[in-house]
Length: 225
Image (tube, rainbow, N blue to C red; front, top):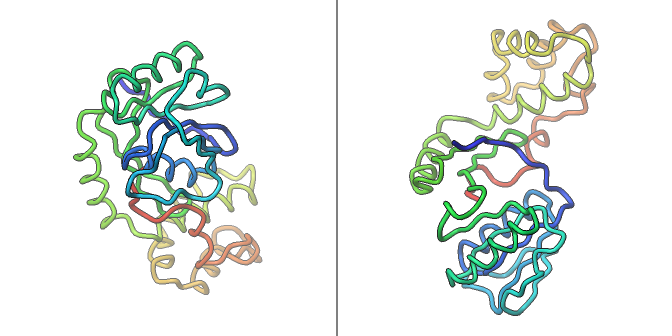
């Protein structure tokens, strides 16, 4: 049984072995998460160029290439190489994803839908990544950008108001129509609602938010990484 987690890899080394379409997709996803990325491959596949900041070792995999990594991705076109990568990862206690045989790895990656700071993950226990992507694409049409804005607003309120019952406040905001106001881009209406539930002076501006910028930190919605 899988145990889903959200892992903060910002500034941490992740190593990808292989630069085919799957390997490069892993590289882009890791860079989007602000990881330090090392790619080991003699040449790039057709989906290059590499994003800025990737350390590219232009040669085949060698034992020791995973040293210092927090995650490893065995994405070579050669199953023997992937097996060797998985073996090194296990010896070093490094979680590894094996793209050609997920059962031989420690983790699989879900299909991700991002709305600003909100991330929705769809997983199938490794059974069908294609089905996960289809479900993710369906959700893309259901979950609008206002949800990402709501998460950004809720986080700012939690930081500002501290000991206030945050869960109750979020439920109250939802009940009085915050999502509709966010979807409409009605900043004045949102400010009135915030003042009503949190006291005079509470506004988007006082929270350091604007409707345009609140959801721009994350990668584009619906990207599978």
